[in-house]
Length: 132
Image 1 (cartoon, rainbow, N blue to C red):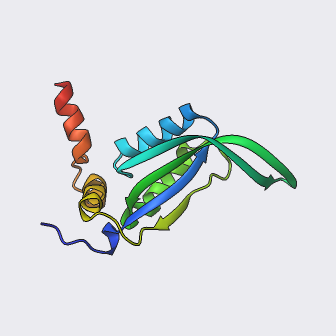
Image 2 (cartoon, one colour):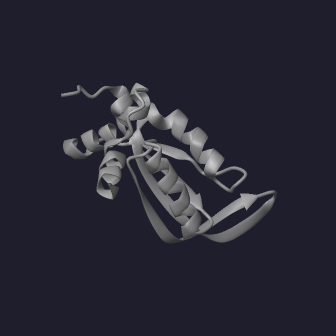
């Protein structure tokens, strides 16, 4: 059994997208690449913000992603590449407590990229086996 360390600490990352299709495209890519264990796509968010000197109001889709602290830098870089916004919201929130089994699952699903062993995350292996 792997001993959790600071890099395995579960972190929630928030972003918004202009629509559900974009949100799902980003989430699927990040799960597929092992940068996040999962994402919740939450439609119906109203965002009010100032951009280029003007107060704006837009409908958006919230994406709540679960990853580990050790994957944050790679996640932020890749999410920014995938995102259509010039300055996407990417905020990491530390998780103070959670079900230990869930934390282990998040760490396991994002661990391959941290180890650098080239082995895809477990969920990808299961999907690939199901398709064979």
